[in-house]
Length: 49
Picture (cartoon, rainbow, N blue to C red):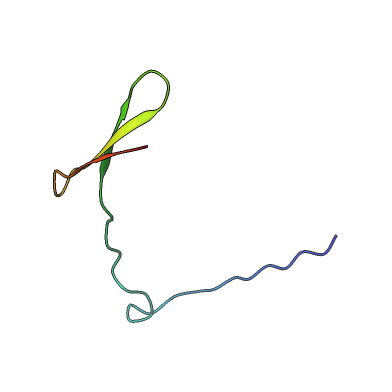
């Protein structure tokens, strides 16, 4: 079996930036599928077709 592995060591604070949290979403289930998605930070509601 050919396996290629890459390992990186990060030991200095200036190598990796501070992580930024992404958006949070709420999903509406209609009993068969997700039909609406709400983005919590803006309140925007998107209809899923």
